[in-house]
Length: 311
View 1 (tube, rainbow, N blue to C red):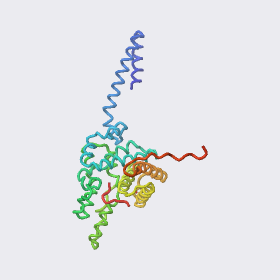
View 2 (view 1 turned 90 degrees about the vertical axis):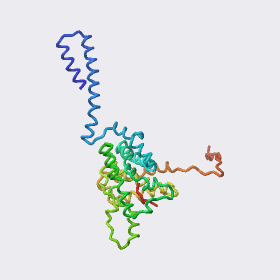
View 3 (view 1 turned 180 degrees about the vertical axis):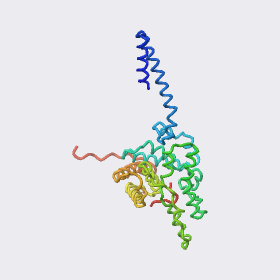
View 4 (view 1 turned 45 degrees about the horizontal axis):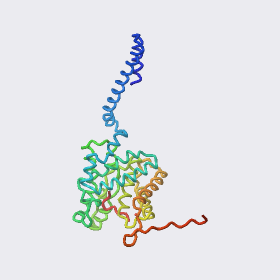
């Protein structure tokens, strides 16, 4: 636009035979005005274009990723365990996406909001429960499963109320796919073995992940929840848990509708392991809390998977 203005302005002043100094001044101030108008026009129309096309700019994603955003601050107050879980999942998913060349900025924004629906009933999710206090102990399994499942619906409602972009809705909707809430299904079968249960009462509504980004988040979400409860998170146990969960999602056909390749999965698993090993690295315990200085040797020759309340 600015270039077109310059050409049009130059043609007009040349036709009027203006002095060279006046021509330069006119073009300069006209260019400044055109540039400012262009910037303001683009800034005004970008939100409308994003809403119309469903495509979010990097600037919008950066704003959504600001942990001081009102909805994220509310999450940190109402469900602090879920908030911490989301930060950890974001670190896992971002590393995997950088490794496979997916949109890491989109993933971080999406993960921050993927569990906002838990604010409706934060005490029913294990990461927010005080030790030894679980309200599910007083509920029938079917009701517990409904509360867990509904955090997706509640999240979509909040996302609409706060006018979050459609790409963020996708992470809320797809991060559990159509997986089963198996802990409560098994509990219901044990309580009423003769009852013909409807498995759909214990399954997330989906859809399955449709993009590489939402698929990575599905994996990172399950892996973070499972490794968080490992008693001894050694590197080998962390890698075994990652392998088990990825293979489980493949066997359940949860990744059938996304373009993740086998190579992508191998890279993602390696990145998950790298980040988790760093997170769970333990310092050596010294007797009586005394840290001894140990000289290096001289050189020779000069995480059971707990999906009771899926995160």
